[in-house]
Image (cartoon, rainbow, N blue to C red; front, side, top):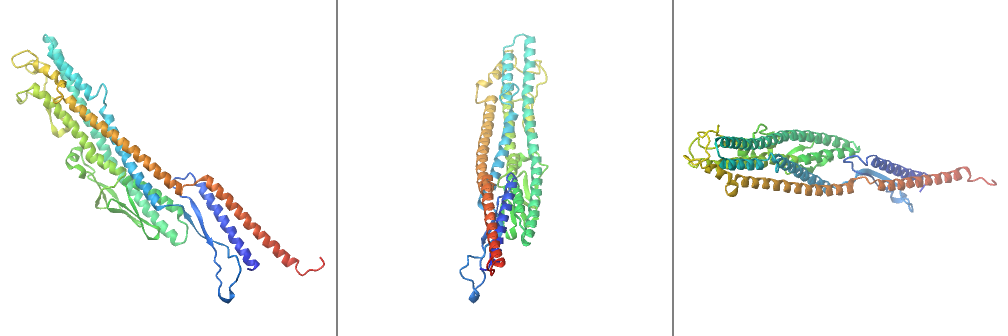
Length: 465
C-alpha cells in the first residue's frame, strides 16, 4: 500500500471518529427530549476494489466506511408500548367517569339520599304518634318538607348525571377533532420523510416526531400502525384507515346532538365515530372510554336513579293509597323524565288533603306503617338505594383497580422502550471517550505517516549529514 493510500485510510478513520463524536453530542443534547430515539453511526470495513493481475497483496484494507446514521428502535417494543399506553388511557378515562359518578352520590353525608329517606321515615313515625291538631299539622308539614327534600335530592342527582353525560358527549367531539388534527400531522410527516429519504437526507428527527404523533393518536383511539414503502406508515382506527401515506381522513362524531333520553333507548349505537363516511369503533383509548360512558355507563346509572324514584313512589303509594284511586297517591312519577320525574302530589295538611289514618278514623295507621317501612327490607326504598350505592361504589373501585394495573403495565412498556431507544448519559460519556481516543489514535497515525514522508523526501540520498 502506498503512503498516499495510508493517508486516505487515516482520513476515513478521522472522519468516522469525528462523525461518531458528533452523533454522541446529538444524543447528549436530546437526553431529555420527549420521544427522542438514540442515534448511532453505522460503519463497516472499506473493501479494496482492485483485482486481477494488478491486485495488491498483503495489505490491511482500505479503512472504514460510514454507511448511515440509524435510530435505536425496536418495532415490536414500540408497538407494545403504544398498545399499552392506549389501554391505560382508556382505563384512566373510565375510572374518572366512575369516580365522578361516585362523588356525585354524596354518600354518606347529611345531604345524601340515604339521609333524606331516613329523615322522611322518622317524620312519618312522628306523625303516627302525634296528638292534637297543632301537633298533627306540624308533623304533616314536616312530612311534606322532608318528602320534597327526597324529590329535590333525586332531581339533583339526575341533573348532575345529565350534566356529566353532556360534558362527555361534547368532549367526544373535541377528542375526535384532536385525533383528526394529529392524523393530518402524521400524513404531513409521511410526505416530508419520503422526500428526505429520496434525497438521501437523514429523517431520524422526523421519524421521532411522527412516532410522537402516532402515539398520541393511539392514546386517543387505539390506532394501529402499518409500515409501507418509502418510510411512510398507514394508521387505522378500528377497520378504517385514517392515514394512508400522505393523505388523512377526518374523524367525526355521529349524532353530536344526542340526548341522554335518546341514549337510553339506543344503547351502544347511540353515539358513534366515523372516519370519513365509515362508522368505526375504537379498539381502546380515551375515545373508547368516552363512547362507552355516553352510550352505556351513564345511561345505566340514570336508569338506576329512575328505578329508585319509581320504587319510592310505588312503595309509599301502596301504603298511603292502598285502593289505588286516581289522585289519592302521595307521590307521582313520570318515567319519561327519569329520576327527576318524581313529585309530591299532596298540596296541604288538612284532613281533606292529607291521608295518614284509616278512612273514618284517626288511628294514624298509614303514617305509622310508612314510618316502619325500613323494617321491611323487601319493600324499603332505602334497601334498594343502598344496593344501588354499593353497586356503583364497587364499579368505581373495580375501574380504579383496572386503571392502576393498566398504568403499571404501560409504565413497564415505556421502560422497555426507553431501554432500547432512550439516551443513557453514562453510556454516551463512555462512547465519547472511546471515540475521542479513536480520533487521537488516527491523528497519531497521520503524524507518523507525515514523519515518514519527511524522512523520505528531505533526508533520503543525502550522505555525510
